[in-house]
Amino acid sequence: MDLRGSTGRQRLDEPRHHGGVRRVGALARPEHVEVAQRDGFESVQLGEDAAVVLYRNRRDEERAAPAPLCYPVVDLDRVRGKHRLTIPAPHRRYWLTRQYAKDYLQNLRLGDTHIEVDLHPLRVRRCTITVPDLRFGHGQVLSVRGTPGARQVHLAELGETRLAMLRDERAGFYVNTPLDRQYIIIPRSICDSMGDRFLKDLKITIDSLFPQPGGYCPTVIPYNDYGQKSFVRQARAVFEAVAAFGVQPGYGTVMLHRTNDRAHRQEDQLAAAVVRGLFENHQLRVGVMHCDTVRECYNEILQSDGQRQYYPDSSQRGRLSGYLRNVALNKILLINRKWPFVLADRLHADITIGIDVKNNTCGLLAVGRFGADVRPFLKTSQQQEQLQPSQVKRYLCEVLRDEASITSEPIRTIVIHRDGTLWPSELEGAQQAIVELKQEGVISPDATLTILEIAKSSPAPLRLYGVTEGSDSRPWIENAEVGDCYIVDDTEAYLCTTGQPFLHQGTARPLHVKRVAGPLPLLHCLEDLYALTVLAWMMIQGCPRYPIFP
Image 1 (cartoon, rainbow, N blue to C red):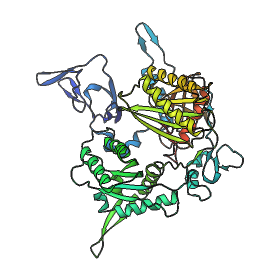
Image 2: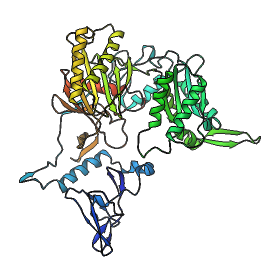
Image 3: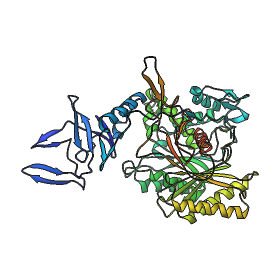
């Protein structure tokens, strides 16, 4: 049986008995567990707060084992193809949750207080936010709302229709100006093998999505990837190749190896270093792709004349097609700020600013009224997560002055989306920025600031289900629909950005949204937030869980 734990997916074998001590798989020895040798056997004294893992043995009997005695024997990354088998369907998760509450949560005590857990989930009136209308090139509008004059589409067909409209010469990309100077920085080993075929296929994909005079014709820069695939060596090879070539400011994409000194599940430091280094030193904005899929999807054929030719593997054509489309859209066109579509109706906010802080880097993304103006800002911070008031004030002043310089309308409604926790120091800095900008006349004297905390995870996550009564009096359980929300009060809500009809496996995980400051009504905040998830262009055919930022 597979169990999800803090260290990944765990498989527990049937316990073996050794002198009265039950062992599961093998003994782990965390610091809070005392282990002593006694007569050839190991006795273990666990802390009172140790968790217990439930599992079933080969006879399908339920057993329990202390969690500190267990360790993962199969990593999730090694059984990724089987992971979908461990994801329960909505109806199964619903009934398992109720059964768990019945079996284990009916005799709880906190001191002298008895705690009762209701076996019946909370029923709430359905509240749904409709998918906003989208504007493509040549003024074409796509609508699931029945907007007059727009192209009508059913919600279930929205993803495929969006992709079809991008390929339709009567619509196409909303931003369809020609691409600027283009580069592809690629490993020498790929250039010497399937590189020509890959670039040909990539060119065909981009030209089908974004036709332009002359087509997509990047300058190819190979770098020496032979030898050890370490972080330092690969980064140096990329920078040396670019410097030797003498690039000019422009856009591009870099193909990288996955380095052998990268810790398991650690973020890709090589990609981050390359993106930042090429922009700071050469004014080159790049996206990053990896060569794994390219190597796995092309076969080498030795011709009769001794020449080697490369062709897509017939069993990998679907995977390769999706990969090429992903690279074309996310690593090239979006890097060049060629937006596929924007919102047909304006947001409630005049400007929405997403903020995320990670590993001493603060990322900000400003989105205008219709999502057509999207501007990223990247700042280096001395803090890992929490920003100081002076930093927040400086960053927001820069973003809002930049917005004011390109818009003729006054800025009255400002909304900040903080990924994770908004620290008191950050709230203080944001309020100081608004005061200063009002005094300067950059924003309207009556401008307001609303700040949302958007939690991607929670220690006690909430699930929303669509429940209807069946003909046999048994409820029919299914996923909530995209746009469904549960508003707890005037400051807290849960919003389903995934769900029916796009989520084909598992149960939708709503975003937990808190309005921590500001006067913009929570429902208006949720409508804008959902619109920005629809505007997240990385998944044209699906529904991303997170908004366009952070």
